[in-house]
Length: 277
Image (cartoon, rainbow, N blue to C red; front, side, top):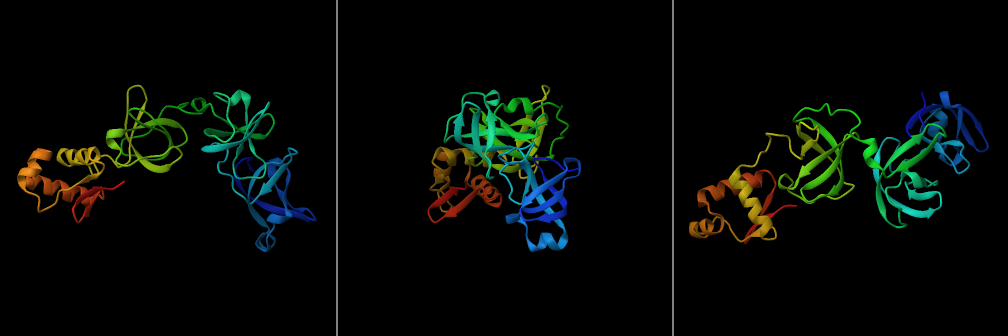
């Protein structure tokens, strides 16, 4: 079954001056404009296309991929606003509309917003919504600790980073467990740390129990962050200076440095150690 707002592999039905018509199955025949028709399409009689409505609300097929498809979340930039809503640049000739009813607050031209792309089943039009919460946490989280998940960083808060988990749930990455800056819109892999009694999800960037930082190494990391990511300490530093600065023995200092170096958290400089990230 062909789907609007998704990638489909469709068979060529016939060729015209305007392009080729593809078998959209349940959607009927769909035009793929001539500029997308390659020799490979003609030879295989199939095309991998994205289906959406053009400016005249006709279904068309394109080999261009949008920045986000139906069911996905993305940060997109507003390029125009009018009485109907805000229009977003999503990488296709026809801009993506966020109706006024789907805006949390009135959107501003030139700004970037987190939106969810959805299909209006009544009109078969693709639109976007900035009311993210209504598309998340609609089913209980069925994850298990240690499970790998896909994350989209949504925003930074006082306690950490809010992230969208597998396009279905909200989760949180706590600042004391994140060892590099994260940016809204960043996509990365993470792991489930635990599901709390209220079904809230705690996340990690490393698999629980794997590469765990011991307390002494954690203390060294914290001291590095407090000193702009650099400490003028190395193997030649006296035990007294290490004890005074870190409150640990030189032996434990060397163990912590070795541990963090193996985990690629620090790098060695001629005059000390530097935090990575």
